Length: 289
Ligand SMILES: C[S@@+](CC[C@H](N)C(=O)[O-])C[C@H]1O[C@@H](n2cnc3c(N)ncnc32)[C@H](O)[C@@H]1O
Image (cartoon, rainbow, N blue to C red; front, side, top):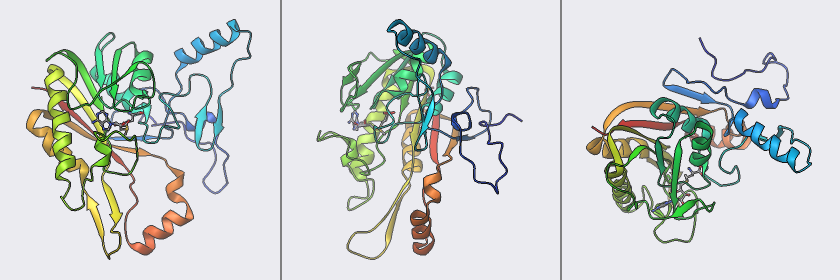
C-alpha cells in the first residue's frame, strides 16, 4: 500500500522535530479518494536543479531547503506564494494534472491568485493560462472569471479554487466573489449565482470529454449579535450547480495535516461551543460530456 507521504521515524510518544523530508509529499499519483498531504507545497526536483544552476551562475551558494513555521522553504520547494492568503495546495493540482492532462495541454485557472497552478504546469510541462481580478504575477491576466477571453471548446483542463464566502479580503475590486456571502440574509443567492456564471464559462471554454477540478471547503460561523450559528454547505451546493453542466467523475476529500487545528484555543472553542473545525476540503472532479 503506497504511503501518502514520508512518515516521521519517531514513535508518537516522543516529541519529534520534523525535518523537511517529513513534510514533503511524495510526487506520485495517489490512488484513493482521501488525499492526505503534509505540506502546502511539494518539492520540485526539476525546479530545484534549475534554481541551483542559476545561483551557481550568479556565483551564489545553493539555497538549502529548511523549515520555517510549518512550511518547507528553499529552492524548488514552493509553488504559488505561501504568503498569499488562500493559496491552493500545489500537491492537489499536481495530482489532477498528472491524471487528467498530457504534456503541452492547455490548462486554465480562472482564479489563479498567486499562480500555484502556473507553477505546477511549468513542472509538468503543461501550458498554464491564469486569470484573476487580483493578479499576483505579471503572467496572470486581470480578468473577471465570469467572462473568459477564450474561444469555446479550446481548453484541455480547468482548475479553480474559488473564494469560500467572505473569509478572505482578496482585493478592493467590487467584482470579487469573495465579497459575496454564501449564507446570510439572501441565503447565499448572489454568491451561488456568481459561481454559476463562472462554472458556465468554464464549461464553455473546455473541450468536449475533458476534465475540470474545483477545490472548495464548506463554511461555518457564529452568528454576530445573536445566538446561534450558521453552516454553509458550499461544497454540495457548488456540486449540484456543476452537475447541470458536467458529469461527475469523483469526489476527493483533501486533508492537510494541519497542526494548528490541534492548538489549545481552537480545540477548546470547538469542544465548548460544540462545533466542528474544518478538517477537509473537497476536490470535485467533473467531465464535460
Ligand atoms: C482561493 S483564492 C485562489 C488561490 C490561487 N489558486 C493560488 O494558489 O494562489 C481565490 C481567488 O479568486 C479571485 N477572485 C475572486 N473573484 C473573482 C472574479 N470574479 N474573477 C476572477 N478572480 C476572482 C481572488 O482574487 C482570489 O485570488
